[in-house]
Image 1 (tube, rainbow, N blue to C red):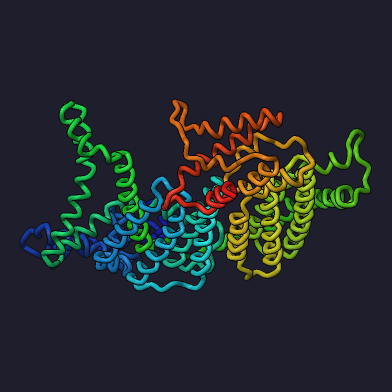
Image 2 (cartoon, helix red, strand yellow):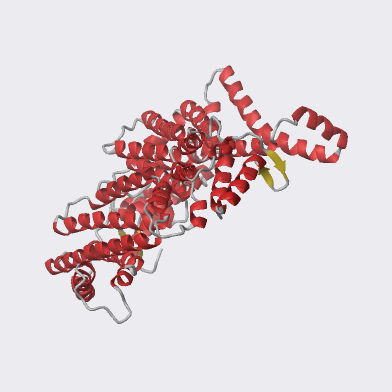
Length: 586
């Protein structure tokens, strides 16, 4: 407690003098009560008296008993929420369901980041969430379909691509969608914005670690209840097996290294078992079980503050001064873009051609556009409403539209000369998203109750789903090989493209007379540097010499496809790799 007072759990300021007076009054009443008795009170009675003093002091001071216990140095007693009680009472569902979910996660995801099992794993996650909410007596809130459908579409897009960058972005998007989906089920997020979500998501994840013991505690509490003897035995047997696996592996490894005869026996009996895989699968099951249960337990506590404070207390003159100066500069710059870049009517500096002028500056303009978005959102969130401020922010937004158009035009002209890459596609995509977000910003400037965060989330999600299904590597190969005026093409870049580009590249090679079906050959010979298909390499060297073609990049790309052909299995079946091999077999 500070010199003057403190903030209580509800965010109210409590004067120190009020609390000290209440404590003195209650202690005085307690002393009178004790002096009137002839016997020394027992420890239980003393504890009860202390509790009475705390509760009485709280009543006098107008505070909660939990607040007074914090003042006196004691840990406050937090009652279980109704959801936490249901979680404990329904362990017979949550325990086995979470374990089955963790097993399915290991089956789908172990050494298999983009196979056909990934959409099934995401679907199982949604089913687990749905039935868990049902057991907690919570119903799906309005808008839940958006999170569920978006997550499934990204899962399908992951199965349909071989691009590691898109796969990583898809998984990040699915994770954020699922966490946001769970938070919306346990909290009222109708007034939340980007800042509130951005602060809550990592907070929920980190504070879930506080529930590390919850899965074990709930299982122990469940076994202590009056359960049938058969159920109790099954629980203990399952727990014993779980504990046995790591102990067995560690002891077997130690004994095998200690005695050569024992090692021969273990090699003969357990030689077919890959202990690295066993440990990897076991670790993933245990990790996912605890992580899932801890997250659900954390959300069941419902301790996330739902209220959103209004921070719009700043003096608008300050914001107007800063943004007005920036807007004046943006107006001049926008005029130059209109007459210089779009219309080509301005005199360029000596040594500059229009083509050179138009092909530079797109990254800088993208950065300024993002900066403007942050500035406008900051002013709307932290400064009092003002008609003049709205006008200035509108001007800044309109100038940003011109900058976005200028950056997009410069990038398109740059691509026409220097070919297409994944990064350049990403820049064009980001500019399109920024354009749509600024439309929402302009609407909210004049319509205060416009749900800007929800609008922005829908825009970003839908646009990204489009990007995920577009197969950027296919677009890059298609443009660079069929429409590019640059010769020769960037061979090093093309050789690093994923199997998404295979239909274009293999068709190109066939048109030049190469037999790409050799990547399907099974005549693979072990070599100290890895697996080598000597038949394909011998053919490739002969054809390349006959054509006088440097062609090393085609060679590297075909080798990559051949390696992926050997990795195709039931779990790891990927649609992009399937179409690549199908094109090779034509």
